[in-house]
Amino acid sequence: MKIKIRKFNVYDSQEVVEILRLNNQYQYPEIEGPEAMRRVAKCDAAIFLVAEVEGVVRGIIRGIYDGSRALIHLLSVHPDYQRLGIGSMLVEAICEEFTHRGTSSFSVTVTKKSASFWERHNFQCLPVFLMLKSDEK
Image (cartoon, rainbow, N blue to C red):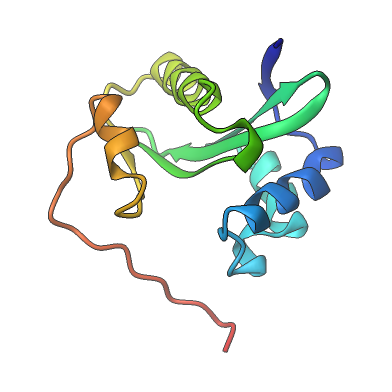
């Protein structure tokens, strides 16, 4: 199986939405939908990568670097392609990109279910919570 990690482009949007839906990660289209993806792709502070398997997007990762630390916002791999190393490849790729930009500190938003994955990649659990304020009602 050939896996290619590359930058997101707008033509990937529908495949990315489908992966997010399959993983129950598409609750807020205003921050996860195609228009938001286009904005993220244009943002200089953001890194938005996809993993292609045989030319089809099967995983994504995105995050930002604020000049001091990097924050990974989202990692998602198509359910049929999980546990094949795609998520790990995406984490390694985004951390490498952030390192080139000058950071040695990475944080990530996680769920209880995904925490063990991140711990295997040397992330430590901190006693903090992520809160969301949205204009959507």
